[in-house]
Image 1: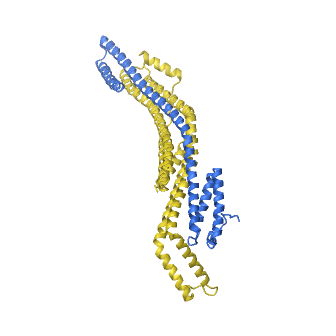
Image 2: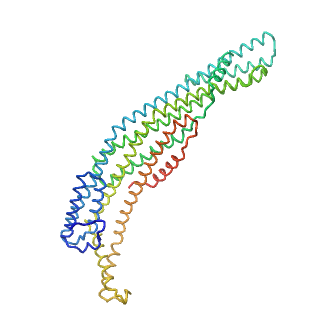
Image 3: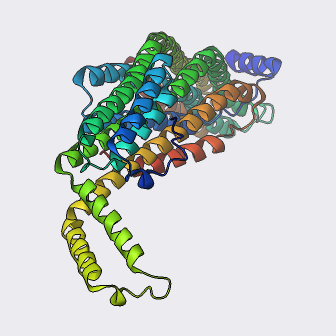
Length: 178
Length: 310
């Protein structure tokens, strides 16, 4: 007799004798072996679930049933253990590829960080260059004003500008060296 | 002031305009959240394996495999941070040059000579900033283009991993159920309860006739037996409820883990697809559409809260 587990009325089966339960377990053992051979995770889980139902519904008070339950429990655990083992093996198999990809991403990250540092440093250099040129130009302008005694107020403003830019330049230079 | 002319001429000749760099921060935050999610999945599965009394050798092998996943996600976090760093560098360049240009602006105003173009200070202010900005944009565009195949490959691997995570979640929770079955087989509690319940149901069924289903009118012997069975079940109630509660907890853990793994798949997929569009976004200056990803990440965060260690 072949059992259709999806349609089986487990509650009704509780009245069955030991031999019926033994037949049911025989069929489940055969299904478990097939699932193990096929290395089919979904099938192993399905058979394990049916074995669980078998244990939950088998009448313990019936002599001999306890041994069947113990057998069913062992097979169920073997199926589940095989699924865990299989899943872990597949994860481990992909680890090698993942390690290589991680190195690649790390390399890109390191290059981008280097580029960011370069942009930051160049910005500072450009700032210092700009500041130096402006100070030079302002000094030259101030000198030319002094020669023609042009405007004291403007000369003072230029002097102030030179000091101001010089201060910022010193601070930025400190950033670069520090 | 030859340098001003040079900068202005170069800037105009190159047609340099300040471009808006994409806001990388939401992407970086999403990367960090994915990293947290993988760590949460690792923690949930590890706890479930411990609760299922999975042998040490298997658990160590799992831990070793997960170590590389966590490491990969950390590398992706570093990558995202480096993107922010390069975008910030461009912005910082513009800010620094702006300081000196503002000072120059004061100088220009003081001279107030109509022969000096008023826009010259703006050109100076922008030129170096634009150069830094463009360099950042180029660096970002280049990084996205070079990293994308790797990011896509990592995403594919992580999505494949999720099938294995599901298998582990299902197998460990079922093993935990088997541990309860083993305990119950030793005590026979559930089986006795089930037998008593079956007997009670049959008694009630046979005692109730078509004419009268009122239990108070059952034959005296049957009524006494029903009372005995009911009292027996009441006596076992505490233990039975504890077992049922334990089973329900396992089912809850299983459902929460599966939801987390499923949403993780969606999150990784969206994350990778948004990275794929980043380079394109850089080229045409379109704003980065991060909404889909942040929605997925927000769902993931909610799931993490739900998953509790067994």
